[in-house]
Image (cartoon, rainbow, N blue to C red; front, side):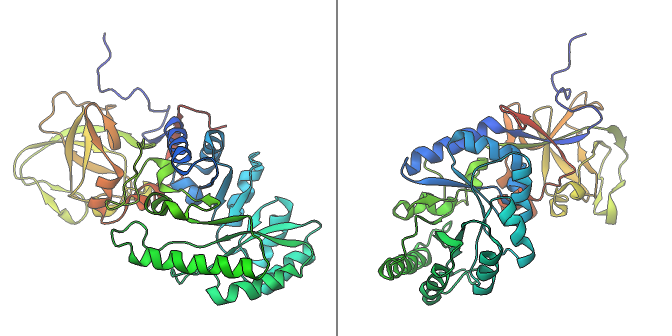
Amino acid sequence: MAERKWAATSAPPGVVTWAEIDLAAIAANTEAIRRWVGPQTEIIAIIKANAYGHDEVAVARTVLEAGATRLAVHRTIDGVRLRREGIEAPVLILGYTPPSGLPMVIEHHLTPTIIDAEVASQLDALAPHPIPIHVKVDTGMSRYGLFPDEVVPFLDLVAALPKVWVEGLFSHFATADEADRGPMLEQWHRFQAVMAAVEAAGHHIPVRHICNSAALIALPEAHLDAVRPGILLYGMNPSAECQAPFSLRPALSLKSLVVRVRTLPAGAAIGYGRTYITERAMTVALVPIGYGDGYHRLISNRGEVLIHGRRVPIRGRVSMDQIVVDVSELEDVRVGDEVVAIGRQGDEVITAEEVAVWAETINYEVVTALHPQVVRLYLGGSAT
């Protein structure tokens, strides 16, 4: 008997909800960024938050093969994991490294961001060999980083330490993905002033970087020695107001299965809180995906999924592990049919951006929220 067109042929054995990660798409996006910034600018690939939900180890290998020269994570332990998986490229820790993490930095040859004189001194005391660090400048985010007038005195202090040297100086834009360029340009001018002051003080820093995904699109003059793409690597634009001038391929699809089909009578309540009451007899499908997988509860009674290449609406609240969808307009829906929550099926597609609208958030959070329990399948490359 011929295979039904919409049967789920890609589901791993015993798995009912999974994500497909297209590593070839991530490679293509990296190569597009490389062409845009040119060979003179390094790519520091941002793979924090488990590579925006795509798996940091698989993505690390892919982007390095495609032209990235460095990686960046937020926490020390993420850098340690990369080293234990055999990743040898420079790994920058963007966030705070506590003193207890300094031995791990040394052992695993990581590059910490340090803005505290005491921590720098402790690193110097522990290090058996010179350790590179990066220094962050707060040009307008009011988070981690030194104020501009604190940078040169800090560099003077570090210069007196024999086993700590400043490899990088960087900052981060707060509004590069917005149409109003004013605040971004103010930050850029502050960072330019800091760089000039640093040079005037006799400090030469080889890796200066400020551009995230949005800024590397919107402000090419700020590419400097390196750029830090994140969301672009995964095939998504920073915002509706900031679109890449080159082609992107979304890398993540989120899929599940139909696990039950039945007809409800008129007047049936669906889900917690009885937020949806059927007005007529309705054929519904049960799909085992929910907020426990990272599929936002705010999508309740708003979102859609794809079954048989068509959009079908979610009825009732998103539960921890399940949703109910109305398949009354479809024919021959069966247990085992593929369901697409993010991605393409036939001629239809549901993007992370569309899901973000339903969930009242941004595409970054939609993919980053995907729980590690959701099995990842890798396409177009090797995850090992």
